[in-house]
Image (cartoon, rainbow, N blue to C red; front, side, top):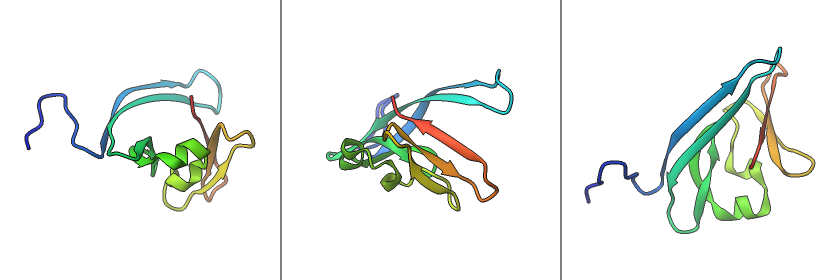
Length: 100
């Protein structure tokens, strides 16, 4: 099966936009938009800090760490209100991701 131009293969994602704001000291805010062609029962999510198709139940239940969003060696914790997660690097640096 051949893909038309602009079509994604089933189960894959691509980054469409990526904006970075480093105007605040010691803080970078990044906003990313991805486009995914997920299979039935899957939805766009994040795996190993990259856009990926993940089990839709993870998104519905907001158990973000179940999709393995952090890089290898980082620890994942849910934000208190389940609006996202944090990835903690071994050196203590924390990356916070919120879902909108």
